[in-house]
Amino acid sequence: MTDRVPGQFSLVLHSHLPWLANHGRWPVGEEWLYQSWADCYLPVYDVLRRLAQDGYTDQLTLGITPVLAAQLDDPYTASSMHEWLADWQLRAVEAAMSRDRTRADSGTREFRASAAALADFEKHWRHGGSPQIRSLASSGVIELLGGPLAHPFAPLLDERLRRLSLREGLADAEHRWGVRPTGIWAPECAYTPGMEAEYRAAGVGHFMVDGPTLHGDTALGRPVGDSGVVAFGRDLTVSYRVWSPKSGYPGHADYRDFHTYDHETGFKSVRVTGKTVPAHEKKAYDPARVDAAIDAHVDDFIGCIRERLISESDRIGRPALVVAAFDTELYGHWWHEGPIWLERLLRRLPEAGVTVGTLDTARRNGFVGEPVDLQDSSWGSGKDWRVWEGPQVQHLVQLNSEVTATALDSLDKRRDGRLGRDEIADQILRETLMTVQSDWPFMVSKDTAAGYAQDRAHKHAHATREIAGASDAGHDRTALRLARGWRNADNLFGALDARRLESHGDESRRDENRQAGDLR
Image (cartoon, rainbow, N blue to C red):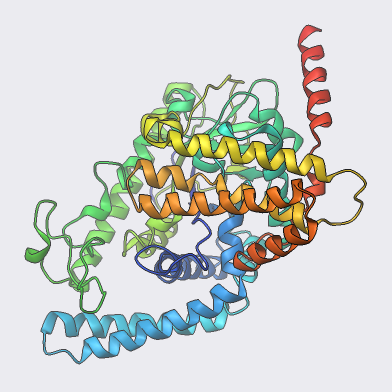
């Protein structure tokens, strides 16, 4: 074994997709979910099961957003996923019989992969994702991170909705997984001063920010102000070694190319070959070539981690923490070889003298420095809010503001004299949260299926206005019919109860108390 290095390495994965069920299939819609499920979630969870079976613990901090968890548990999406896997196998059989050698070889590989995926899904996933997540959490191999209910860009969200979304998101996690996360991945790592107090009130002990939010000093978690809530920063020096806006391991010439499809089969049958090589000139994918590349990239990353732990520990004069954080979907979906790389990395790190632990372990073991005051930030372009409130998405910012005001006004009106659950109020709230998801402005700003994103935002906004309009006019029978219709279309967050939304009076008293505290 290599000599041990000081400190701890933490790997954090953030799993998220917007709600896609019943909102189109291809090229954007449910296909996005099923590809990610097959290419990423199945193999990554398989890796974690093997590690747990071999006695590994405290290996990974895994964030799963409530909106993704809802899709992994939904009976419709589970049934459709099973059909999608079967269709994948049928397409593979057809491709394997092709006279084109590259297409036939690809079909044979895809048949084996689809057969393995079907067997895995039927054994582990037919009753939803929560049994898998519960099992991994109870094994101790992972720490779970929660998050707000429908993945809003929280700094731009009305404070009442923001607090509700966080509380409901954590409650949803506890309901599904039997454990209430003490840490969260805030959507887009977005932060504005004051959110730490909301975190503390919700029982959150730590959360993720991007490295620049801590001015690049990510060697320790930092309590925010006097809240006691610890912000852990993504170490960009290490994280960008794997994947950055400009480079990373998945771009290696021998790895399977994500962007190039065989349009006849829908399979990805070529390797990257070269960054400037046009699609029609890319070479056939050869699995025999990738093993050496994976090993080289594991060794390179371990070397990077060791060097960073040593240098950061020397700089701060005590054992340091290094946090690398990525979207989970990088592993398998965007980077086909990613799950293999991930397993080899986690198995070899202890042999390389690196202590691995979760964020919760880092906090409990004292990898925490002095308090810090944070400013507005995110992990998006510019590390500010431009992706979610820039000129190109001002129409969505305005839409969100108008819909939120409409919904809250209508919900406040419906409170009078009502004691039981209110289907109309619940659906107004549900559609509002779906409208303000951070995915829609992100997709517009990045021009990735921008039309789909705008359609989704306006569809949920229309649903909110339609139900609220009938409610405000006193047409409860019409409002109930509309609420049930929209509820059937998007069957998620059944436990959401509008009675738990703070009233406007509660918010006013909270502001008065806050101001009085400031004066004291």
